[in-house]
Amino acid sequence: MNNQVDRAHYATVSPYQDSPQSIGHGATISAPHMHAAAVESLLPHLLPTPGSPPRRVLDIGSGSGYLTHVLAELVGESGTVVGVEHISALRDLGDANMRASARGRDLLAAGRVRFVVGDGRQGWVEQEGAGAGADGGEGSWDAIHVGASAVRLHEELVRQLRAPGRLFIPVDDDEAGGGAGNQHIWTVDKDAEGRVSRKKLFGVRYVPLTDRPRS
Ligand code: SAH
Image 1 (cartoon, helix red, strand yellow):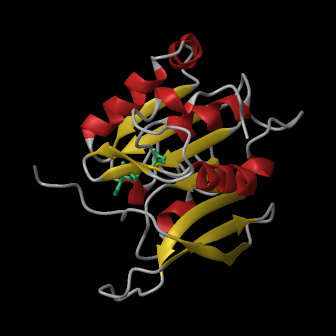
Image 2 (spheres, protein in one colour):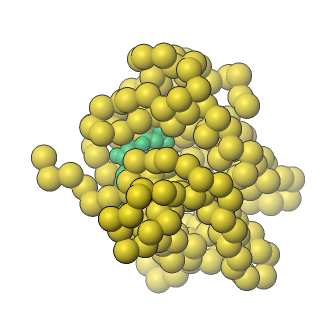
């Protein structure tokens, strides 16, 4: 997928094994095949396009920071990627893992990647004021990746997509909760005219997108 980013900087145990690995705080770094599937799905909205505005990408539940780094490589020099974590220790982990490589340090220093603390279910809006983050506006995103399983397709995330833009999100099948824990990847596309369509892709197993833990 992207040979420039070494998973060993992002997972201390079995970094190259094709399965999720614990990164503490009940979180895991996703398996390589899941990162690959996410990038493949989002790719048309990641690569820089001549004549288009610089890419802006949101990585919700950035965890290890591995995918955040890969996304930053793909959006090119003009693009920016923001990683959102609701656990500040994991925000710091992503940041520290990127600092393990000279390239990661450069991307952070250039402001091409930032890790922030917030509830990813609200997306992330950098500019204040009316309309910030809304359809195609300054604060909106070409691509939003969600790395934890949601109970629903959060409308606020769809609202913050550019037109065109794509949301990649694992969603629990049983919206009422308490089910067998089955989940599927969904993509939500906003086309150039702002029309929204959704697609259910394949079954997955992610940690949940939740409220912030109390401790
Ligand atoms: N993409 C990451 C996945 C980490 S696991 C990686 O491959 O390393 C999922 C992450 O989602 C966890 O780190 C968890 O802390 C985070 N998370 C869960 N609920 C969240 C929320 N409401 N807002 C932001 N992050 C959340």
